[in-house]
Image (cartoon, rainbow, N blue to C red; front, side):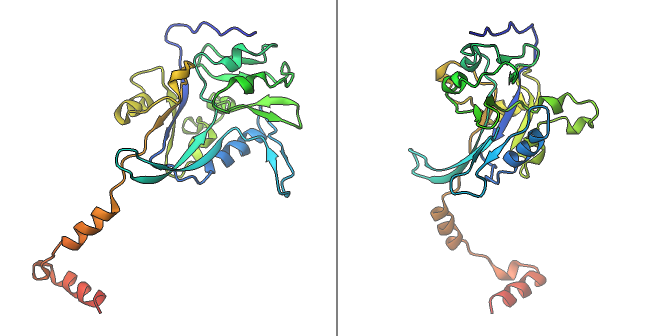
Length: 250
């Protein structure tokens, strides 16, 4: 059994904030994550049977897509849900490890795996309720999201590039990175403003990562009805707009 460290007062809680309202499910985060980590300190991230019917491999970040319905309004929408390690404050995946391979850093809260100590027993993957642990059939060890720890502290990179690869790659800026232990940080303020939430808090693992909920979608039926009711006085429009309206109405 592995013990959790005592975090010093004022220690960072580095994590991700993911905006489910603007995530388009493009998988750019997953691909960028794999590209960076495959050749980095925590790589490789092997794939097997890539051209076969049932390929499998190691992905630190996966994106799932769901069709959901608002129980109150019956409104339906598609939600793209990125999933990776949540770097919990009290993770069972760490305490269940018999060799100390799975550990949590006191200085910033990042949960990592020491490959040299990992025996591939998979106890951590069974203990993680979020499905964030990946087993490498090739390496015989567990792997997981590292928050690109070998990147965010890399002083050879420009300051603006010292972020996880997934954050830098997101085309809609749906992913944010920062110190969620600092109430004044940009990510903490974003969570407060958008009522961000932790995933399955009732389990008691205290995930650091936060998700921002999708905003309510406009009822398309009412929107069409309102549009039909709108009446525009063409005589009040500028001459150019009247000409454009006449041209498009042909």
